[in-house]
Length: 134
Length: 296
Image 1 (cartoon, rainbow over the protein chains, first blue to last red):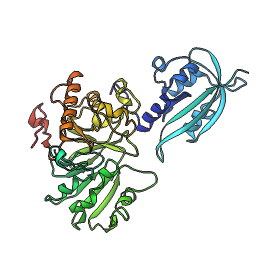
Image 2 (cartoon, chains in turn orange, purple):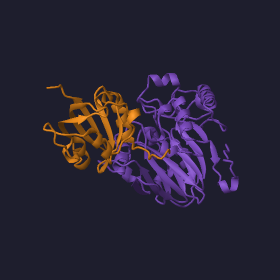
Image 3 (cartoon, rainbow over the protein chains, first blue to last red):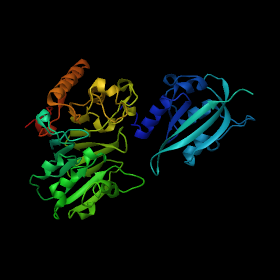
Image 4 (cartoon, helix red, strand yellow):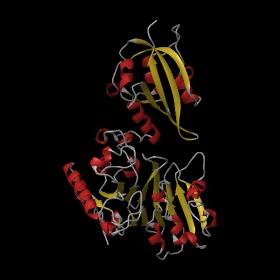
């Protein structure tokens, strides 16, 4: 299968859901690997998904350089996607990133975990909105 | 293994003069493994005539894809279900809220059915399908959730190098352009990959599908495209619409063969399932590289 394992059906449907949204959306697998982002997210991220492709957690975290309003780096556990992955609960916060095109943006992010069964975390969906410039 | 179709109609049983050729019973396939183990795929109305036959000793494994009535409604009319010497293992999709037995009992209890599931004298054992492949008799089975409303499984049965895949209710094209998907994003792919035979939902014509997106079923074009993406050797069109006459089904079969050929598919071309279709999937070491499909 071209070296990639099959995605869980819940992840497949989450991608389908995200692809139809006018809101920017990320889909990560259970290990935090970025497996999809939609067209509205391309505007914020600065690349199309076709250009970026799937990215491991460490790679996309490093590229986006998430940080708080004072510029201090945010650890994974302090970001909504990290909370959803590590604590398996929804979370929301506002922080700054650098898009893959090098542009800085303030974004609000809401992330929630995806469970295929009660204890089977299969991924995370993150919705994000660009904040108006102060 | 030998597979026999006892019901291939979708949604609702459709007996009558217009459906004599392909049959009116809802989903049920008997699979006899080389070691004699009996697997039954779904318990639509086709399980009634299956149960009227003679059964050798040994457990029966009923593999349910889901609980829509056309896949369950025959269970209460399966003769072995009412015999105390029957050992019946029922497999189905897991739920975080209710046991498999509780979910089946929602149908097999008043007011929907006159008798309780617990009144069956047979030895019943309920199994949530495991997430990993497992062995039953001489076969290795894999179950995977697939795109259809509510928890729904597809089954893959492997024995001696032959693979029978069963996806009777499946809408892999929901909101997607199937041909653009890579296999890892394709619902049902792990079930159907390189299967010798695939029974696949082909309920709708291409025109009908446009008005029935999200109903959980495939058009004939989706069935062919899916089978080609999965590298299937023989596609058998299944889950026929209850409104479809024999003559209309034959046109659907013609359309499938046209699409198959146009997409570069080689023989054997797709065929329509019918009640009574029976074939052996031969051991490759016996049949060489020829996969035998022998309708009776």
